[in-house]
Image 1: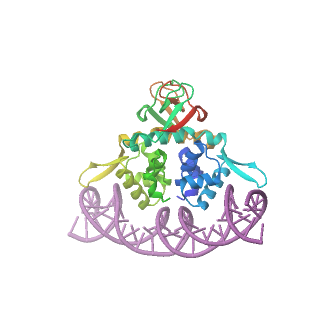
Image 2 (image 1 turned 60 degrees about the vertical axis):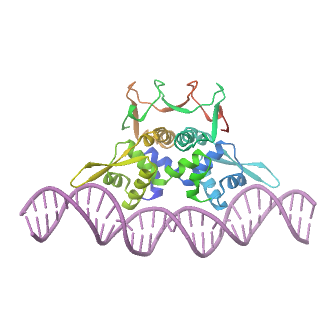
Image 3 (image 1 turned 180 degrees about the horizontal axis):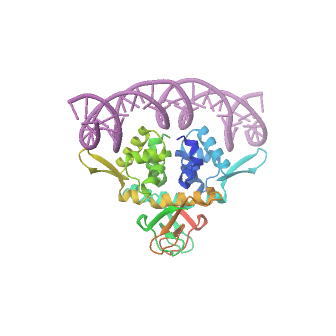
Length: 146
Length: 146
DNA sequence: GAAGGTTGGTATTGAATCCGAACCCAGTCA
DNA sequence: TGACTGGGTTCGGATTCAATACCAACCTTC
């Protein structure tokens, strides 16, 4: 199978991975959720070449995950912001962060803490059932074709 | 920055992505959660070349996400199973699946349904706060160094 | 006991892709 | 005028992909 054929597969993982499954794309999205918006800042934070940043940002814009909008004229300058579709990736990023915190934090603890504004506590994300609100583990789930 | 330098970064996303951020790795993990365990089945389901399957499986075993164990002798045959560390990736996969379901399902609806055994309902994953159990969106979170 | 099949891989190799360095460009500042 | 800044594009070499072929145990069948 070819990489770009993934988006044609009848599988939501495949279709999502075709958009966000790239090495640097998830790193870009992480920075988006941390408030980074400008081309130069993406480049500086990631330490990768400009062509990669440009190409990935363009793909994310085409996919509707980011939107590119001017924040000044004369000279015109653009920034990249998450769309609703991009914001919907928040659980993905949080799940990845949490897994990394669990298994790669080292003795210094997790590099970043997340505070829930509503309750004021530092939290970890918990995946729950939309129907009964109970936390869900892999063994609690039965999969069947839809 | 080089790709393999990612695992040295003080960022849980970077460290996780260094392990699972590959094109095919997430697809392999998806199949693991669907119960696929044998080399040939991975190969057939993904439709990719054997060398890629072999290389990715080996990396996942080295990373402690899968373990390789014999299911028969004479001739000895192995299968790949999720470790606890691998099972801990379930929220990541579910989050990716849910995002794909939301934005790429098409009119036929999501390709797979997930039933919560405990309550018997088809569900979608909801990310909640570990402290107050409320659902969490991107805007509810404040990030600070840990 | 030779032929062929099954499972689970390695080796090789041309093609596609990635990536970094360098270059480009429009506008502004000194 | 000349330099600088933000935001890219181009290009060639290094890496990675994926297809094909091959290997290695073991079993089955004739």
